[in-house]
Length: 386
Image (cartoon, rainbow, N blue to C red):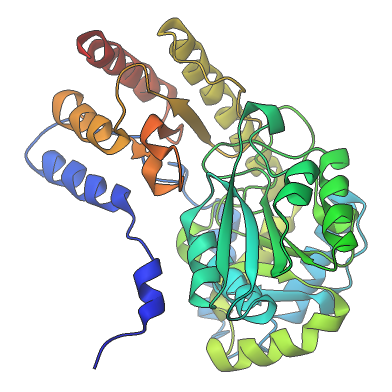
């Protein structure tokens, strides 16, 4: 008896092979610079950790409601009002085990066998895979400089088909770090609504914006489904906590799904996350954002000196999507050679792009400036030999 054939559409992360090789080289004594993993080198803010420890000490380890701790849903609602001017009723917020839990709920609710989904190419591969597991066909629309590396309204109009049910955006995006502005997000929302479709927006990197204030789709449309996470801006990767904002009409079926799929998110993690919204924690998170912005500039300046600057600088997240086609037409081989010859680990573009990924790599500026500068020295040596 075989396994579910939909699993054949779920590709492995090639970067995990590189990570294993990088870790093996470290074990052999090599000095490896890690710029491949989407996780900054910061620890979880101390206030959040202390809140989690207190929850454990106080015995707050029993189940919460499936949609999440009421106090946390209220805190998230207040976050949207305070920072984005969006009134989101706490009842529309469902707390999930990581953003992956939110994506799973959204995919199971919104699409079924034979439906089609529009999303940008390149994109975070799990976004495609969740839709495929739900039975949908993903139309990965190539994006580039012309559309700001985003799925814009003209692309939605051009690629929408009779079976298309959903358009998915990511702002800031992984792997490119590019964002949609208010006008662009509003135009896409209107284009999708005019076709009777649904809009799902990945805001997992929201808050990690460097040029313009962060924007949320919740301030533009009450009908959009919005995924967010405590992992990136809030620094809680291993706590596995996220949330989904849904239209009121979707709350009951989503809660029913949550009850059956994961019952509830981690209780100690939810209590810890309450501290993320305090002014003291916000101050620390903003300091970290400034550090990432400085790192971005160091990396961009160094790449420019090598003639490798991206055509559009990333506006958010902590990635640079880099065209390496002048040196290689195989991003996997490029990354493996860079690791073997210079001990710098970065991610091949084929992990993210359905088409054209061989020409690109993703570099995460998730290491300190001294290490970024050393990585640039090593990269310069490497491309000089290419």
